[in-house]
Length: 204
Image (cartoon, rainbow, N blue to C red; front, side, top):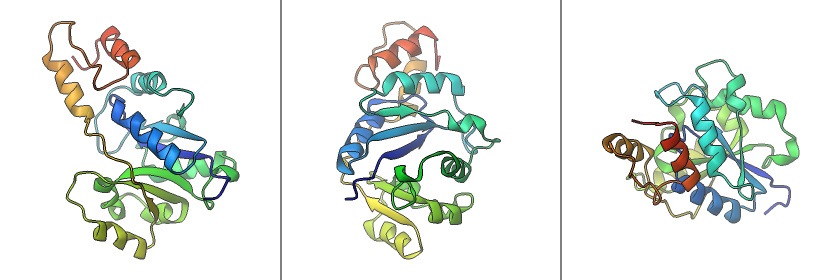
């Protein structure tokens, strides 16, 4: 493994960020010897309605310890909708090339999302500028289907990370169903994130 590997990018809505996100990031950081994981909350995702960026950014900031990485607001400077290729182009304009992997942006993505990568906006830019770190998820996608994407020009490494079965939508539903203030999210989110959700009455 090259010694100049520095940063890996973790894109997502993080609505809210949960323990599955940070545990996966910790594993990827160790497995591929990254200096830090840069969490990139989506500012205006094209296919999802989501909580205000301000709250999601603040929650990721609370969830990510400095030893793991940082949270970036890079997508705030982009014209909506914030397709991934726009963010990748912006990263190329602003970061030191020594922080990239073989001149490409390391980008964490699950099997279920990666299998549809050719349908993303401007996939040729992603082929050119991204090295994906692909995570296995319980999605029914086979290894053969994923490996076929390499033959079609996508650059990636398969991670041996174990998928943590926590879903943001189930956390939101649980908060919405709970009418009292006694709901505990300690098994799903960081305590500071739980406090932020309760303080700002999010997802109710």
